[in-house]
Image 1 (cartoon, one colour):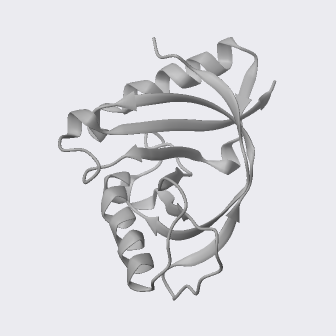
Image 2 (spheres, rainbow, N blue to C red):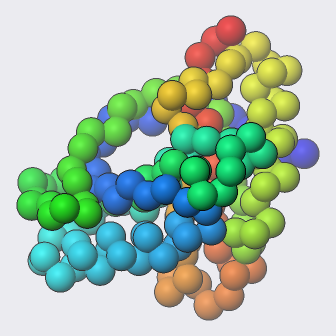
Length: 156
């Protein structure tokens, strides 16, 4: 069983790229946002993350809604694809996955079971977040990837 904890995530300014479709395109979308930001000459100030708004067990892959986000501290101009927004702060139930992205799914089940067993309920409209703490480029192999799963929660 994963070690799940509750912590507060502060609000943050991000550049985000919304997309619709299979969640396995997240890595490609993160690369797009990082490349855009670097071309524009703006630094980013934290780990990239994705927000997933739909349950892939209940929504068709081509209808899944998500955003990839890069925290930024300074104002920067977006274009038609990249928007600047404020991601709200919240309490999250979270756990860390080390290893390839395609092995993350079971951790979601463990987190949602923990939420129910510990008197919390998910805040569905805020989506579930995957914070990419170590990405390819930072590490050499998929076995070294580090992703924190965050599920916004409130006390039930």
